[in-house]
Every structure is written in structure tokens, then in C-alpha cells.
Image 1 (cartoon, one colour):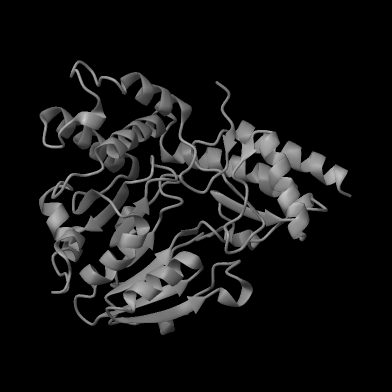
Image 2: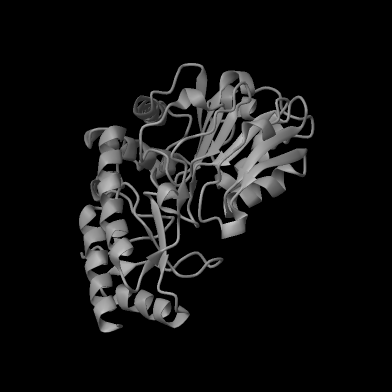
Amino acid sequence: MTRVYNFSAGPAILPEPVLKKAASELPEYGSTGMSVMEMSHRSKVYQEIFDRAETGLRGLLNIPSNYHVLFLQGGAHLQFDMVPLNLFAKNKKCDMIHTGTWTKRAKDAAEKFGTVNLVASSEDKNFSYIPKTDPSKFSADADYFYICSNNTIEGTRYAEFPDTGNVPLIADMSSEILSTPLDVNRFGLIFAGAQKNVGPAGVTIAIIRDELAGHALSVTPTMLDYRVHIKERSMYNTPPTYGIYMAMLVFDWIKEQGGLAAMEEKNKKKAAILYNFLDSSSLFKGTAAREDRSIMNIPFLTGSDELDSEFIKSAEKQGLLNLAGHRSVGGMRASIYNAMPSEGVSRLVDFMKKFETEHK
């Protein structure tokens, strides 16, 4: 079997040791006589898997005891609705920093239930940077303050998170969770789709401070109420059992790599390989402001749609797959999540150098 280098933004590359472990356990988990895929989520054996997954995540992020960990479904898109339905508890108002596609969708969802105050936006430069904020524009009576910590499409990330005082900070961390250490205490709620750094598509992680749950709007459907899922420990209905098992294996793998501090060091070195080339290239150019560059998602282009298309097709022949940028922006994008080895990034840069030489 020959594995390619998969630069997809998601579903994305998974650690090869995790895939091999899952493959070996696919027909039978331990001595149970059945696959995890076949297990009842109410069974003792599966409960042990679930507990191990939660414990693994709590350990990696040092999640305090007053935060609940939920394994849900529906992706970030469902969270766009769940957040305002549950957190518009007092004034039905939130502050938001607008940094791209995913904050636009979160804004559209929140405006169905309340008021969104955009305290800053980078739309003036195609979301190529993280805007500075003026605290005087923050709403003291906001129910929450919303950001997307890493913008998958635009390739930007927060170097520092805003200080929102007593207003809970809510973050969509779908494309960077578990890539660096994180102080969970700074946030009221963190959510993330699994299909970047956690596991296969189908699982959504939510980490919520206890005091923020239990205040859902009266129109909130049962399945969208955080307190319902907290009470039932993510098992109000059948959870994505196999996806949670895969996440458990990924959490174990990250711990084996040395934890989040070690992952951050590796990720920064990988990103530097590509950024250093982009900064010196006469053909390829990065699109994100230097001070706000993501270490997970790196968009770039040649300036020619025809050359971009040729590069993507040629790269595929070299085993460098899924480098097309998001359909909304075009160009190219290399997503280099935790499981992408540095060799993959080096191979990409070597091919870019060759392509540049041939197209001077």
C-alpha cells in the first residue's frame, strides 16, 4: 500500500498508527467478539471507551472540572444554531469579530434569534488578516463574544485572544483544536468538528462551562439543548460511537507524541518549511498577513487561474492530493494538521520549486 500526502482541509489526514490500530481492532475489539461499530452505546465495554476518550481530551487540554465535555453530531454548522439558542439567555445580544466564511455563517444563524454586534471585521481585505479590536466597542451587556480562532479557508489565526472581561468568549476551534496548548479557562464554550485534528467526520466536540448551560430559549428543540446532553453524558440519543472511539485513539497518539506543547513545536516547524519558501518564491505567494498566519491551513496562489489548475493536477500525479483552495476563493491551500508528517510538507515544497523552475 502506498499512502499519498493528503492536504485536505477536512475530512483530513489521520495518524497512520491510529489507522493501523483501528484496522487491527475493526473485526473484534479486545475479546468482546464484536467490532466497536456493532456495540450498544449503553454497554459496559463501550462506556469504558467513551470514558477513556473524555479522560484523554480532558488530560490534553487540562479541562477544569467545572467544564463539561460533550461528543455531539451536526458539525460546526449545528453549533452555529446551538450557541445562540442556549446562550441568548439575558439580552439576546452578542459581539463578534468577523474573519471569514465561518463567522459569516455563525452571524447569519445568530441573527435569527437576537442581535449581533460586529466589533471588528477583516472583510475589507478579503479576510486576509485578524483585525485589531477596540474594547470601547465591546458590549458590556452582551450574552457572549464570538470568534473563529483559526480560519480554515482564509488561512488566518489569532495570535492572541481578545480580553472580553465578564462576557463569555465563545470559539469555533474546528481547524486548530489540539494543535497547540490552550487555556480553557479563558473561554465559556469551545466547539470543534472532529474531521481536522481529532478523527473522522461525524463527531463534534463541545467544551462548555457549567454555568452557561441550562438557560436555553423556550423555542430550543430538545436535541439542541446543551443541558440535555450534559445530563445524559452525550447519550441522550445514540452518539457517533465509532467516531468517538477513533477520537480516543487520536488522543492517545497525541499524548504519545509528547502532548500539545510537542505538537505545537512540530506544527510550527512544518509551517515554517512552507512559509519560508513562499516568502522567497517568485511564482507562489501566500495570501494571509504574516503576523496572522495559520499553522494549520496555508493558502497560496500563482496569480494565474490556469497555472493554479495546472499545478494542482501536476501535484496529484506526485501523490500530493487535495491542494485546491476552497471553491469560494480558488488558488491552492495546504492543510497541514497534526498528522501531516514534515516529510509531506518538504515533498510539497520540493515540487513547488520544480514547478516554479519550469514556469519562469
